[in-house]
Image 1 (cartoon, rainbow, N blue to C red):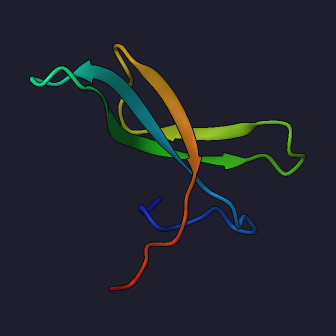
Image 2 (image 1 turned 45 degrees about the horizontal axis):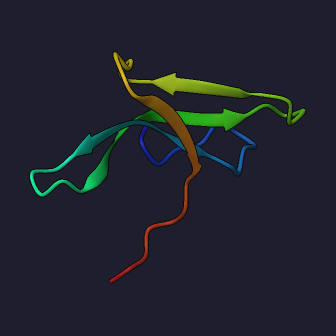
Image 3 (image 1 turned 180 degrees about the horizontal axis):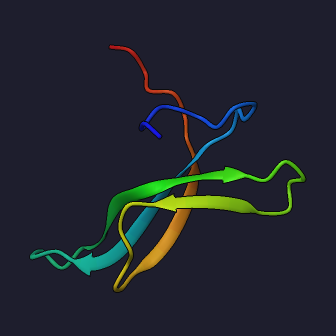
Amino acid sequence: MTENSLPPGNTMRYDVFIVEDYTDRGGAEKANWIRVGAAFPHKDGKGFNAELRALPVSGKIVLRLREPKQDG
């Protein structure tokens, strides 16, 4: 499946991220978001199929609704 493709009949897609919190050199709390896959809701709305290209060894997994990129 390509990065911008969707399973047939599915209009929603979620990007899957690993989020790792860290403190920068200035002492500010920050988060590093690494996209590792995509998730698609089940037809009955009771779950998701996630297609991961990497597995987390630490941090947390976040699913965010994919929004079209803005032109410009």
